[in-house]
Length: 117
Image (cartoon, rainbow, N blue to C red; front, side):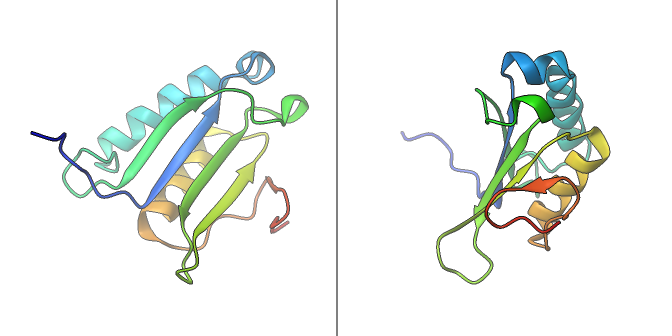
């Protein structure tokens, strides 16, 4: 019997590299995980669609904690990705909710080729 599949609207990764950990990324991951569970946003909860993973270095070492999100492109052409630096819990929760709702992602602290700020 194969494992149970849970539909996913997006995957959030929170950097756990040493510089991000020094800036609180371990606490951010734990707080975000607890939030996803309480709000039933975690992929295995009823109605939840988000996956959350601790990642290795995301390359924003001087600006951590860093967060990256991958989700289906709203236009249907592959994956949309967004990168965030200096992430605090309120921003992480906004990114998670927007990903779950398939809404536009926040522009605050976004960086990279498709940055919105």
